[in-house]
Structure formats: structure tokens, C-alpha cells
Image 1: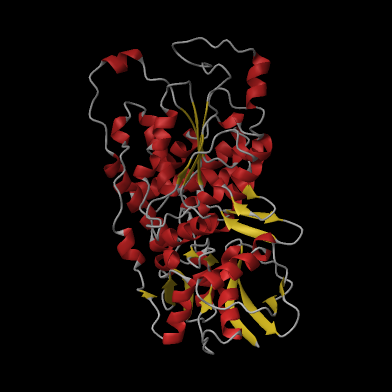
Image 2: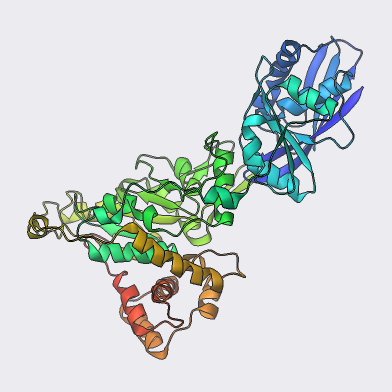
Length: 509
């Protein structure tokens, strides 16, 4: 007898329809899976057999053939355990599977319990787009999948429960979740910009960067506060919109990093990988491509401390996400694209000893060592970083003086949120979230420079020998500064401030 169950295969973040066909024939006992399965899918034979027997069902000695169609699409992971088991039970007459039954996915333990799988949100969204009305999956994934409106989500704890729910027609349905309500419950940031003494120039630069999602490079001696500033950056960034939160959650779901009790990511990611990370770990990759740190930082902050210490291949791999907001990984059998709309925040010392240009300590590095230290930072990479600032050490006099009350993060976040709302109004038809994401055509069409601002930009182009990309990025930063002030046009003062963030701090090539 033949039975069919719908399921889904993920390639990156994209879902592809899969039909699980199980044929049980009277012949020499065998259990075969075809349809381009990987090792994890092939091993499902033993998990399915044990789960069926330990759940109280019969596993007759027949010839069992499982086909995962389409046969030219590679199937990966253990999520096909449940649809294979349900199709087997339907084919042997041990469970009813109606004609318009839901799609199914889930991993089986040997005792028949259902374990959560990765990518449940991406699968649910893909099924919803194709018009599928119901999805059966492990109960641990139910709240995550319930974020997709219009899709009936059925959560089950065991194989027996899943089969009985379908036969009785009374499935355990997860109630649809409201992303707006989940976003309304945000944990307060413990780190605050009020903790940072002095560094007014760096704070202003980070405010501009947070408002427009611009990339930042901070250069300064050890102990000047670069890491402290970077770790407080999320506290001044605009709150997540619903679309942004769902986009981030989709990545974390596929990566298997979504907490069981948190169906939606409600805060912007902050990722700070160590400088020994590999290129595939930073950008993404592997034989079965997985999202890297740049994708896990999607719509959040990717903080790279000790910037020149990262591997050259890893640093050069940042070019595409900084320019396009995505990463494409090509393999022999597949090509996968992950989102990577990141706000890069990098920090570095000006030289190997760290004290080049310092007012209190003398640099001991030879000139060739300084050149070697910064040689990994290529011109094209630096050209994609919008703000390059020097973070000087706080003077001894300033440390001894009674510290004035610094502006708290909440006040700065209110300004950046207002600026981001102006950007969303201007970019509403483009699918972009911030000024840093604008294309060159959008820069020309949407950024209105006053004549004095255009003249200043032309002079800077000639004197500083800027590239066309650098000019566009200067205009983007100037537009963010204008948005912070609430002015509709870019003035010369906005361009001047933007240019001040492009100056070459000590140690940069």
C-alpha cells in the first residue's frame, strides 16, 4: 500500500516542497530511502523503526520503500523522521491520514518522542506562501511556527500523539502569536552610555552610526574605551520593527540558536567573534552551508575587536555583506544566500604596541611593523566603512575631576528612533530599513543636497581623492545627520561633520 505526506526541505532560508512517499509491499524485508538523502536522512530508518515499535505500533517484515520527491533536490537533516513514520503508519493501515492532511516535520527519538528541529519558522513561512493551511510538528517548535498568520500549527509531543490527533480529528493546536505583543516585552539593557566618561566625539559618531546603521571603525590605544563603547551600542539603537524581528528570528531558527522559551527575537543581535575565527565561521559556509556570524548579526551589530588580527580571507569576505547586505555561498550541488544586513563595528590599536599617537606613552614600533600590522585592511574594505574615528585615551586630569552626569542611552535612543522613522518614511517603497542600505540610485534620488553642501562635497572629492563609493557613503552619513536634526535637506554643516568621520586616524593606511 502507498501513502503520501507533505513536508519541506530547507536550502539556506528558502523552503522547497517535498512529498514523502512510502510504499509497503509483500516481499523480502528491506527498508530503503531514495530521493537524494544525506547521511542524517538515511539514518532515520533506525530511528523510525524503533520509534514505531516503542510507541505500540506494528512494524511488519515487509519491503519498505521511501521516496523523497523531487528526487533531484538534496534532503538534509532529521526533520523527515515524522513524515516518514506517519506515511508508514498510513500505508500499513495503523493510522488515518486524511486527503487534506497537514504537512509534517520533526525528529523522532527512539522511544517515539518528538524532538525540535531547526528552521521551523522558515518552513512555516514557506508553507504559508504556497497555500498550505496546516503544519504538524514537535510541540517545542509550535510557538515559533505560530508566528505565521493563517497557518494552523499542530504541536505533538510523541509519535503516538501525532497519529492519534490526526485520527481523532482533535489536534493540539498552537494559538497564533502576535509578534507585536512579543516585541512589547523587551528586557532593559544593563549597559548604558552614561557609564562612559568623556569620549563625546566617539559617542556622537556612534549615535550617527546607530541612527543610520552605518559601519564604524574605532582606532585608539588600549584602555581608551573602544570595547566599552561598542558593547553599549545596542542600547542606543532604534527598537526592532515586526518585520525586522521576524527576519532575525528566521536566521536564528535555521541556525538552531533560538531558545526554546523565546519564539521571537526581541532585541537586536550583538555578535562579537574572536579574531581566530575562520572565514567560513565569520561569513558562513561548510559542506552543508550554514549561516556565519555576519548572518547571525543580521539587522544588528557585528563587533570585531582587534580588527587587523582577523584572517585576511575572513576580512575580505566582509565586502559582499557590507555592500549588498547578503552572503551567497556556492557549492557543487547548491547555492545558498543568507541575509547579512549588518552594522559593522570594528576596533583596533593604531600599531602593534598600541600607543602610536598616544599623549601619555611613546610608541616603540618600527615603521615596517606598523605597515605590516595594518596591511590586512585593504583600501576596498576601508572604503566600505562609513565612519572612521579616533578614540583617544581619557586624560589623567579628566579622570581625577568629578565626573559630570553623562547622557543616558534612553535619551540617545529616542533621537535615533526618531531619525530611523524619517528614514523608513523616505524608503518605504524600497524595502530598505536605514540610510546605510540605500543604493547609489536611491542616494541620487532621495538625498537632497543644498548648493553649499554639493560644493563642499565636490571640493572634498578632488582634495581627498575620494572614490565614487566613498562620496555616496559621505552623503548617506550626512543624510543621517540631517535626519537626527529633523531637516529635509542636507546642509554644508552636515557634509562637514560627515567628512570629519572619514579622516585617517593614526595607523590606518
